[in-house]
Image (cartoon, rainbow, N blue to C red):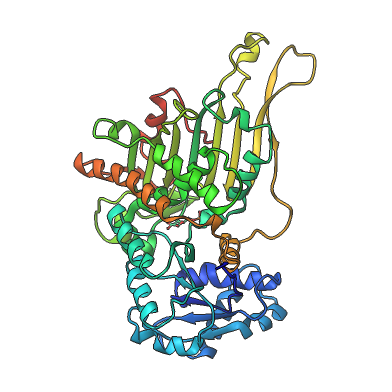
Length: 481
Ligand code: BG6
């Protein structure tokens, strides 16, 4: 039977009074409504344990939206508030969801689980028991799916026992970022780059996700995960996959995801003999970030811990395209600036014809893809300095700017729209999540086998010295300018 796409009539947010809903989900839905992109009759039903009435929830949403810098458009708010509804529930038991089931009255529903991943299995079971896991209902899961391969498999199996894979939308919000999608356009809508996109022309790749924020109040979650599991397992490996994957036959969800899976399968595992050379863990001490004195991670959480807040890794992709091209990944909290960036560093010139003085001017070509704080793509090209001062060269960044002057969308806007439209292309498939965990487990297991503890770094610095040595060992350096 053909798979009928029914209009979704309800979007239920479990955890509707929590942080993710306030920062991302409710504002995204409001902005989609402002642009006329939500199905006209779709209701947004908040659900949480608290026994609120609808009016109190509406007031909460109003306060959340009002507090944002964009300001609230009264006409849009009037429309949006009509969509809002609230129904308390205990999501962990079928009985606890009975009230919600009656409230929804059999409508096609998207369930967004803005909850701890440890509850995903129980919630799916409870939805099933309450008769809410109907044929075309969809479920949206936030990262992290598990803590390692075994726990992720267990969660995926529990979810899969109730919802078939095509109804499961695993969010990695990096995939909703405009520049990340543009990376695919850049690679596969231009003839220029693809012939050079390999180990013949590319020297190495750097992926940096630097944050100035500390862990702060999130430490009870973060302490269990650390930077490796919180950022590398998902966001950074997704970026690596999109840079490294082969051209898919089309942009369809499974075509792209099949190619990402091949990259994950080609990642060289860490071993006891390589762990020290290929990875660096760090943890911030007190320091100064953006001119402000900030405490150490240990002070924030009230005691010493072995969790890393910084990680730098060298990843090698063992296939024909990338053999010999290291991918350097680095992420951390309390770094000097907020920056999410991918740098594709091309190889040096094979021979310079412009004489000795020009030698010091030459920089190898570089494609810089900025995701944050600004979205931009620029290509560093060499150029001749104008004038009569002989053959002197200069490096000029050619901006392929993405800024169309419009409002910068929240990544969740794209993703929520895609769940509503039943388009899973920007969501992570089960095999991707599990392969990513398998590689990450290889790293964390060697770290614990070899008792590799995080090295201290001052807040406001670019991490421990080992992060620099990681590149220096092969004669390279982080591009921090
Ligand atoms: C989340 C992590 O997934 O991504 C956070 O749990 C991190 O620790 C955040 O701060 C970064 O997202 P963005 O979009 O601000 O780069």
